[in-house]
Length: 563
Image 1 (tube, rainbow, N blue to C red):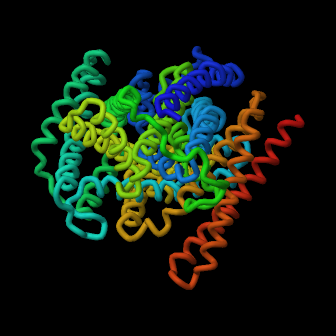
Image 2: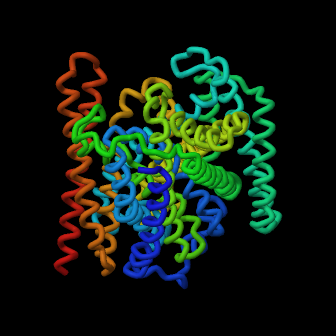
Image 3: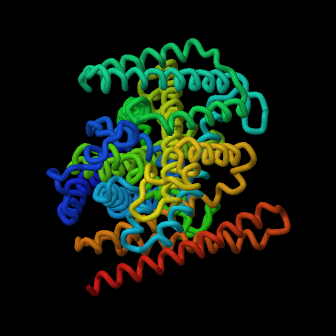
């Protein structure tokens, strides 16, 4: 099989999915462009701020992307390229797109509130609180992991304190410098658009020119040389500030500008794959199918948990109902942003599959999935252009793009965790401004954010990797619960929700099976490491929590279908 054929067929399938299934969903749910959105109804200049569709697409896309659509497909390639490709396409169109679009639409119709509040409307306060606890704990893992990834790509030492040298050190220092300058550029962009009323077109030209300038500067001048631990503390301070500042200052403009890096990455990948095909080096070396059991575990459920963001991710529902729904200008934007962004992420997942297909025979020598991704695409580009310098620049730009997306997801996750923490303490119909008792301290934006940052960064510094294997199942379990919540809500307003039945039941079975296998495996080796016991206990808690939520949701859906 040729990787160019894989890419072109995948893009065609995803475009058809958007035009046919995505639009059908919008009609079934009653998307109404004439309705006033929460960003206008509740505009406060901090969290509820109307955003132009391209700007909001940039925020949403950058926030949900992260390293997920790159890491997942590359790790899952041990099962063969056919299972990976089929799940990315089928999962993206019928599972992930429905999940993201549904969560965004439900939140828009519920004053931009989180999935917890959407669930409360149909399943009560107890279910809401359980969901918020689960979501907040999952976000702590996201903060810990993404902070660690970013610090690892910025620092002059690794997480173990070992010094980094040579080309890798130069790449790390350049990435750190460019990323810091990128934040300043985003603030300038925000001031231009929201305070000086510069048109989005002119501001975008200035922004792209600025990106080129800071990349050139960062590649040639990078004085920021700090250890992994120091960067973790710097990131803690950054996300504490970034997640409580008005979204127009940093979140909207930074995410919009970072989306250009993602678009650049997609264009580079397409050119590289076409070039490789022209040069006759576009063969897929990965076996089509390697078996139901490999070094990656059993195909079911491992494939569906490992690929995660490339097909469906519970984190996406938190972004859709946390930040995106508070900024959407018009309901008609929900389809391209909620459903369309997920399918674009599927394209990135396919490109990741193409990248590892190109370097499959030596992928084990390259290290992390991010390096495999950057190496595969940059080598395709180099083999086609015969320009080593250009190949190296492309490699560094791809590494930079992934780091920027991780940084974006990091402070978005922190802001979302703040929302979840605050909502947990609120009574039905109550807002943060209404609280006048002892809970006022807990719902304070700075306090709720600080609690999340301290715990998340602390976990990243003290051994999150020992608990991280549970994140895949926890994230996909969150997706199952999100599907259940939106399905119940749609039923309560009399809209067609049958398209959720198969996805929610399938994802629930996948994640419960994964957690049960984890429990069995950890119990068998419980005596070897105390962390095995911790992981088994956490997995048991997640199973109990999920079963409780699922029973409540399914009972609610059942009652609505009979009504």
